Image 1 (cartoon, rainbow, N blue to C red):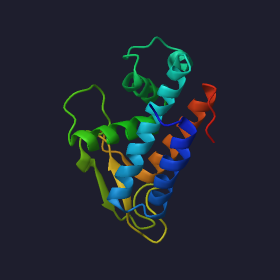
Image 2 (image 1 turned 135 degrees about the vertical axis):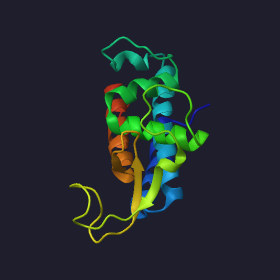
Image 3 (image 1 turned 45 degrees about the vertical axis):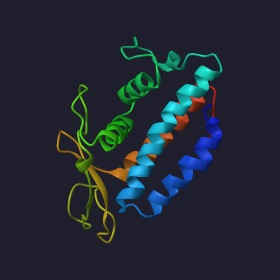
Length: 170
């Protein structure tokens, strides 16, 4: 039996994301936040299926993926670039290195690292004021993303998806 969606969101996801937000250079907090936000997508899928509805109804294009929670996450990744990165980071952390799958953004757990980009270095929006360390994920295309931004944007996206399916959780 799956934990109720709202309970999972409030009691598991939010505290771990808050801890990561307060300590965004801690690799263990980043890995945990990525894992639970990715798992939230599976919980959304389960909640909708458990109510006898089709979670794939939100997708306007034909579904190419399996019609399970893995396929649901794959379709969500097509809609949101932050969630695509988060999903790939979660898979890379779980498997250490991705050897299967097409068009992955991240292929290994080592693609997430603690960095320090001082103000004025790097592109606009990269780095924290004062040059404090933070977690950064580097994609296959050599683009750097602050992991906390990816997590927060993905969580907002999933909250919106859940609401659009009739299951508002925030």
